[in-house]
Length: 147
Image 1 (tube, rainbow, N blue to C red):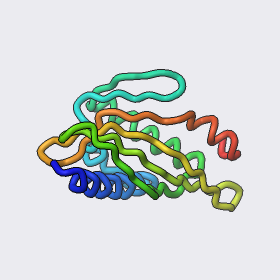
Image 2: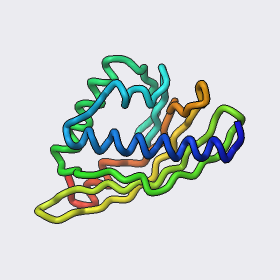
Image 3: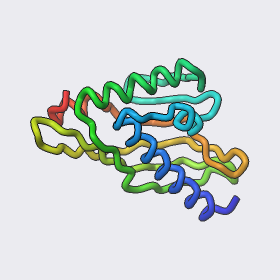
Image 4: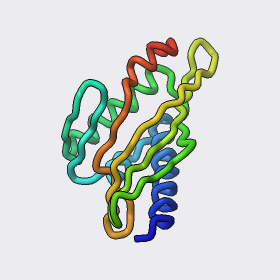
């Protein structure tokens, strides 16, 4: 697959990811669609370690709880502002994403920009996440007074 084609597909993928995330913030999550963004097995890394998981009913339950948590702390919108890709080969890229999460705190909107990196594999020409690397989300939320 050509690099520019990969970049365009990954950008479109994250626009759909953003759309589904925002539906979930409205308590209208389609967990089947959201789970479809991920491979059968995946890895997740943050400053506290690395975990492996499976795309199954437990993942969907965890996602549902995660969206519930975000709603409970005032998240009202998630924006994917930029996606840059680094091709690893003709089937894999790293997507370097810039996000902005928006919270309602004491009647005021609070924007929290952050970065995440996703490991993406192309399956039948479509991107699927098989891993991600993130920073310390809880610390960022504490610094901004959200939690």
